Length: 184
Length: 184
Image (tube, rainbow over all chains, first blue to last red; front, side, top):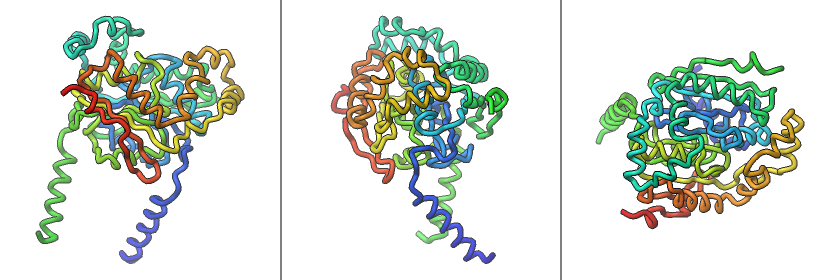
């Protein structure tokens, strides 16, 4: 094909993609739960070949679950039951900033910026317990996959996959193949 | 400047951007809390001029707070105290899928996929209360900004801005200018 035709064909496809009405229900029927890390912004999605309209994205610090009935699980519930998502990807990453957080330094920074000690002490799970979950990003992905699989709010038929992402190279590795555990 | 020089200058900048080591601490010192909506994927960040390494991104269903000590607030705490973020953007969006969710239809879908009624009944806040927060996306942004501003875990000096995003056009409007409330 001549270059002119190549270019025109690319443009027609590009325009079609840009102008297609994007549905609220994600095209690839997948919901991704991953980390808020800035190195994943504008990097994880293209590395996974995900475009606008393909997936729901849930993000927090370290892709950790604080509460089995909290915001993350509720978001997954809506993604599955109201937006048609049929699979969950839990994606942790290597070199996670959370893994290196010094609890005492964090506490000191909070108090020095005016956070009352009582507000920190009132946290359940405690700051100590919560930060403990970050020291092993790989173990955290496996733990979160297990917690979601056992969570009664997540239907058994929905595969929960566990993956690790390299925030430097963009490579993705499978830890847990959710298809092995979900009934057809 | 001649075209050749334009192109070479662009390329030099592009290479420098691609190859700069991306720090865990976001370059623009900002943490964004927004919705998991698929129409925002690969769209909100470029619409805000945010690139890899610029910002932390927290996402859940409807950008809502379920628990004042839950995963979202903890993620903000880490973004502020461990990663140097000095501002919070709460970004809701118009035409939010959550606003149209029918509670009975959602409940029916959950039960029909094997979720026990008791697991739904055990949710605190209840499904009904939680879904109620979505009917007014604009009011939700204002409410979340207020809750974060009053949260003892968020330092008073950190401005909390409230914004609304149009998932069709990509335009962003300010609802709450956090600079007006945060001391210098």
